[in-house]
Amino acid sequence: MFIDYSRVRVKAGNGGNGCCSFRHEKFVPHGGPDGGNGGKGGDVIAVGDRNINTLLYYRYKKLFKAKNGMHGKGKNLFGRKAEDIIIRLPIGTEIYEINENKKRIRKFTEIVKDKQRIILARGGKGGRGNAQFASSTNQAPRKCEQGKQGEEKYLELVLKLLADVGLVGFPNAGKSTLISAISSAHPKIAEYKFTTLEPVLGVVKLNDFTSFVMADIPGIIENAHIGKGLGLQFLKHIQKAKVLLFLIDITDENPLNKYETLKKELHLYDNKLDQKKFLIGINKADLISKQEYSKRITSLKAIFKNKVNEEPLIISAVTGFNIDKLKDRLYKLLQSSA
Image (cartoon, rainbow, N blue to C red; front, side):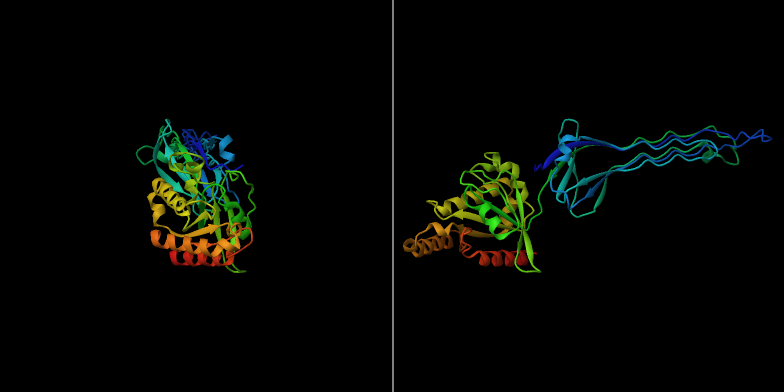
């Protein structure tokens, strides 16, 4: 199951207390201070893990609490430092600090690479034992410190997929068929709307040494930016894409209107999406008869060129028509946006 959102509480361990102790040995009636320091509390640490692609684990486990440091003891025995707790997160996870009312305070950090380590909550420092306070003027100090409290935070985890190309289109535009045809992904394909219920990542190979990652999200409909359909839930997964591929069904009565609606929804969700380079793909060319094909294609190219100054690429994900050309164009756009 793909889960891209969760809230958790992290609590670092408290530092151990310092010890107030004096030497008690035979023939040493006035032994000096020998109280050891307390150990540091355990940290809560996030680690990026490229083998994880969902926040499912954090839907069920909400509290991550490190152990406290051990207290210091006599004979100058220092308390042991507590072990850290490791939280493994997918690459692309944004972490926000929130208050107890679940309101965001700030963006805390982001997991951007494998094995990246970030301390989410620091363990408390151990208190000093009385041996640390001995001096020439105070040779028998009875002072020792309590361990410091470990940090506690409420956090919001938001996973945004890291893909080079974001594939967007209306339901039944053939997105799942396309990503299945050009990549290693095998999403569910059917004739009814919203077959895709969660984002799909696929690796598109041009040759043995060149590839890029494409993300397919559930179909966008009008007013997706305010939560209609599944749009609001998954639009965030194309925010990090370098290039967008708008996929339009050639059998739609007004393909230009479909494109403009998609563009509008992306802009209303995040106006930075308008700044990304893009390609328009007109899919399902196999559904146009040979008699209509030339006239239909000429008309579509002229309309798009005149209205948005972009010439769409006519493709068929089912037959493979112009698919290699599509991959080449997307790769060139990625190279120019690097």
